[in-house]
Image (cartoon, rainbow, N blue to C red; front, side):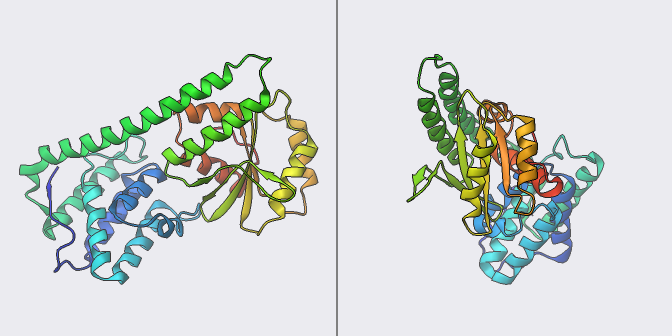
Length: 313
């Protein structure tokens, strides 16, 4: 990996038009997951709240990158420094993500970015320092993966212990255990989660913010699937809040398709604002087979774009 010039130099100016285009092309063609784009901009210094202004399903990775670069260019020297750190982060990639649909376009975009970054002296002596930079980037990547895997592995063990509880043990105890694990799961994925809380007339199992909305959580670990009344009661809690509030109903026992269909039909004429997680979905999260942000994105996209309350992961 090339030696990276410090991004906070006093004489640093905004990215040239050519370099900004190269950054956007890499975000479009060399990345695959929206999570990766988010991680790069946050690592470079963009605040989570600022990034989430543009983290909307109708905006592509390229459009998000363009909007953020434009915002940073208006800030002045501090923004220019963050722009350069974005370039530095992207230049640490040696090849497109394996799942990027057009590998050739991704390789060309990365090559062009490195050429432009070298011309603007953001990358210095790329050939001589390539091995050192790759090693440092790989070390950081592996460390981050190891740390997250370690925590998720500990949570998985606790989750398995809950699953293996004997039938005679309290299902309420399982539910409390799940609520505590959810708090930790959100934390390891850098999402703020409010633990269970009680108001005058209702109990909320948790809440979190995602893509500009507040989500109330109903987490149930019972042997029986929720009936229509359970779903409508939860929807009533959600509908009683501001329009920017949505709900996540977690049922470890799953959902009866007929009940879900009846729920959707009974909800017509009001906001479609509830997404569902089954026990199988939750298991995949604790197994680490899919990240929490990607899981939420998949669920929310299905609800927003197709009106689907339950899209399995």
